[in-house]
Image (cartoon, rainbow, N blue to C red; front, side, top):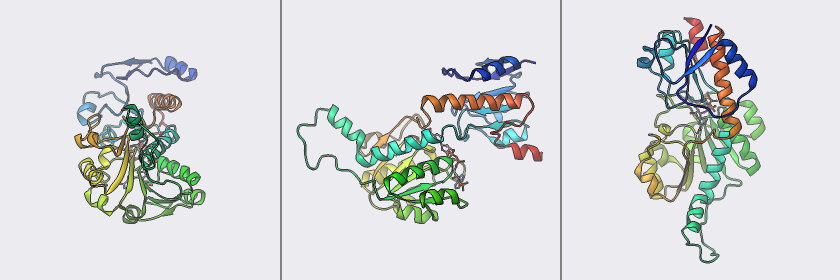
Amino acid sequence: MAFRVYRPYVFPDAIDPDIVKELKRLGVRFESTLHAETDAIVCLLGVKVDAALLDQVPKLRVVSNVAVGYDNIDVAACTARGVIATNTPDVLTEATADLAWALLLAAARRVPEGDRYVRAGKWKRWDWTTLRGADVHGRTLGILGAGRIGQATGHRAVGFSMQVLYTSRERKLLFEHTTLARRVDFKTLLRESDFLSVHVSLSKETRHLIGAKELAMMKPGAILINTARGPIVDEAALVKALKSGKLASAGLDVFEHEPKLHPGLLKLENVAILPHIGSATDSARRRMVETALRNCMSALKGEMPPNAINGHALSRK
Ligand code: NAP
């Protein structure tokens, strides 16, 4: 039997030859257009899978997102139509935690500013006061959402002798054991963190979780890192907090209206900005594609894929 898979992107990486063989054996044909005969979708965050799209593809069995976050997919609409939705957890956890730390250090020690300063020819002599930043070692890191990436980010703080605080709907005992992290409520996290790193997934409940009120509760001179999703932070309020000096700086990989940025952000020196590259390492990207293809093939074979998001909901139908 042949399967028609809508895949609007070309993934350039060489993947596991066993996966290539299995795709061939199943007769998977990748197509760049969506149509009524489409059996599966393999997509990135830029594809919004909503009810309107799903109504165009009555034979669809699976939406396989090549990402761990799936705020681009209306999972309830998939479930209502018997469509499996899948994501790619774990394989990008360490790469994304590394990037959260790259931003944390860059924002604390003003790395992008230093780079711009030198390139602009402003460095005339060594100076006692040039680009003083914030200490990292020994300070307090707050993890907003101690899921996979939140915990991996917290683990790295041990090497910097930091105290780790975290929020989560349930205690993470192994995480506490390995990092001496302390679970606190949201307000305490805001009040006590020198660095606040955002790792919750985006949903109705977490949209603008960090707004003007929350920023006002943070320590003066605190630093905000966001590698989760832009809309979790109210960008206009963040610009105000950075402008006023309430926050010393921020490190951002994600934005409310990507790839557009709040115009105020671009004018600020005290923010490190990256173009949503949390998982952008060769090995993480290759493994994301492999995981997504495995999920897709497993659904096409009539199995429940290992990373089904709505597996439980579908089994209750
Ligand atoms: P995860 O293990 O599922 O962790 C998600 C965290 O969000 C958990 O701590 C969870 O809390 C928390 N959460 C979810 N809904 C919540 C709510 N309503 N209120 C409070 N907390 C809530 O996911 P992950 O693998 O760590 O990935 C986290 C996010 O990072 C993804 O969703 C994605 O958006 C983002 N991401 C970005 C990049 C990038 O390129 N920048 C790369 C990878 C991932 P509990 O602990 O209480 O369950």
